[in-house]
Length: 353
Image 1 (cartoon, rainbow, N blue to C red):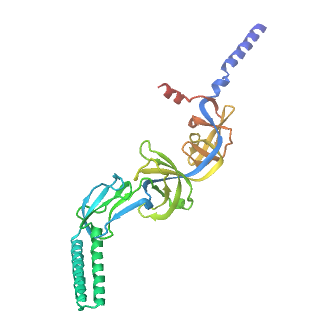
Image 2: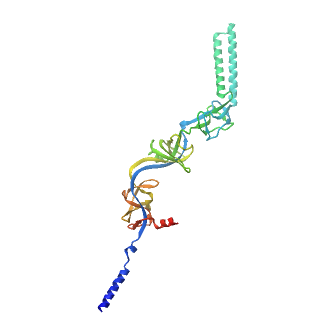
Image 3: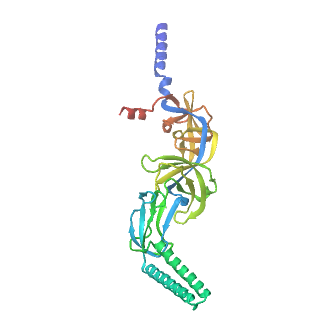
């Protein structure tokens, strides 16, 4: 009887041992990747968009010095020209031709009258005062005729580029009548370019001249240019409802007039910001949180997000520098879950494919 009782007890103990679950089977372990929370200098920036334009102080306007018709345009808008190159040929308008003829006749008539009075004075038939007045009238008429002939080139004149640059505008077409002082061409210098970027009205109050800005062309492989804000135009453009910043581009900048740009304007710099990779921050509705791994255990912590950049975000609360946060595999975690460093199953499968 004793042997049977002992055997039954042993059997019961063995069955109990077999039915008890192991720790490994009861505790899931998630594969994740982590990254350290660090401190670094972080810039608070504003992103703005705009385009390259000629510096207004470097734009030369060619004007008609007399009423004229456009006889010929030798260039096209956007064309690069050299100093002395023909731009527009003007010919005297009908009114200007009448003025040329009239002044030429007046010069001839007043000169003839002066000569006649000189002969009469020699015969004692004209006073010196009459001769002097006639001489002055003749000189004035000749000067007026010569000036108009010089301005019109005798009826036709070709305006040439005063400096090398790019044709920015050609407001008059061939055959058009241009008044004296009217613009016929605009010439901009590519060595003096500005960037004009639209900004929100509230941001216009925060940006100061001299602020650092990094400009990047929006086309593929767009060039990057480091510059500084020259001025802030606080007038609001009605069509866009934006103010603007003006940036003087360094000479030789690899951009072209009219090129579209994106600018990152630096408002302030934090020397020791606590930052984490942007992908570490998850959201429960509008509440951000991260998973911090300590001794292979994931702990969910709410955080406060400060400045944001393309790859990192500032965390003003919830974590400390040196802690490790989950950057891959976070959505599958729960608070207190065991982890191991490695690619999550989905990532590993994708890598094999």
